[in-house]
Length: 154
Image 1 (cartoon, rainbow, N blue to C red):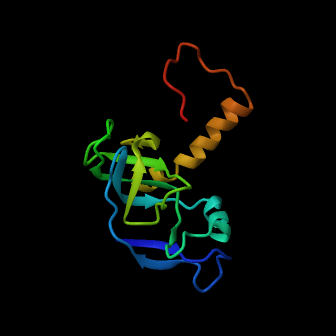
Image 2 (image 1 turned 135 degrees about the horizontal axis):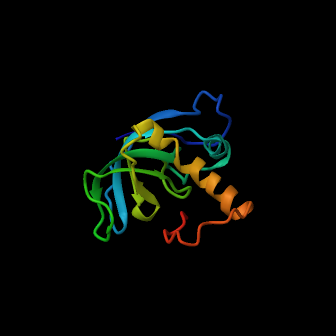
Image 3 (image 1 turned 90 degrees about the vertical axis):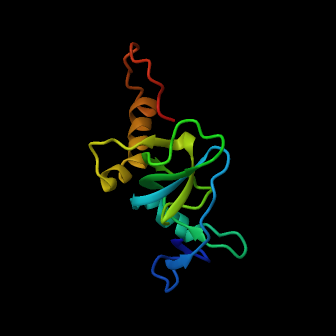
């Protein structure tokens, strides 16, 4: 599968800052879903990771967090998603990022893509929505309606 990554951390203006690479298609296991990425967004954290995160010896670091796409395969312990579901998510700093054709994501950090949003709009939401939530409810302590029994985003 095609991915965008790098082999050594450094400035984004380096000749080898972003490389087109080919990697094997990952296989989902456990709670992982394999998502065919349809859209990604670029966040300031991507630049910070690019500047400082060292890939494991002999491997490439794949950038990207927010994405939207279609579930292509699921691990044996997946409970909430099926092949063909349209999803969106903010990825995990400890795993390969969303700048790839396919990405493994733990189902517990994924949501169904709102039908009213196209792929790009859905990919633009995860980290910005989490940031807004934390600002309103964690930092500013905006009161929530006690009748609202829905679980908070985490």
